[in-house]
Image (cartoon, rainbow, N blue to C red):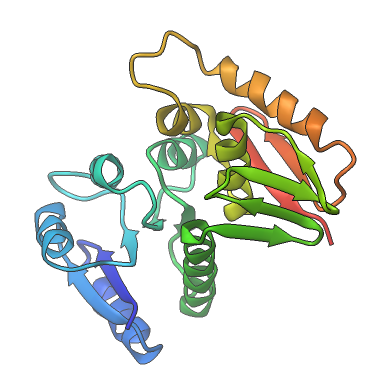
Length: 224
């Protein structure tokens, strides 16, 4: 059964969300603060995290950042009253995969959870196929209409990550943290150079587009 951690200091909201998700078939763990959440993560194999941002002690930003230091792949959804752009940018910057503003619609929450879990399963798989494009993570190879497109390891990793989470915005800083060494002297604009190379190599590919999200980074959009 899929395990979901709900970190929310509002007792009534926490109970409401946990009860609803339990009825949807999830195994849910409700936590009032980050310390409780850390205990659950250490003891259980959690598949997805829902977290508030404004909490006493460790806030949601700090919590998500700490989780990302040990687990780069677990989906994190922020559920918060903070709807300003700076908060959203900070949320995605520390590793959030989705962001919902309170008051939330529970049915929409369930839909977003389903989408995040599907993307996570795709990301953990060895192959990714979109139309006539096939990416093989074991071989680090890309084929479009049966023809191999030569990619460097870093180009492949960037493309595989973006296509594994279509429509999700990745900041330049997040991509740097994941695919460049910590002691690199390269700036975040290095990501722009690699994205340009990927776009050039797949200019004839109609399956997807890498879109620039101004002020943040990039996202992949699958074309119908």
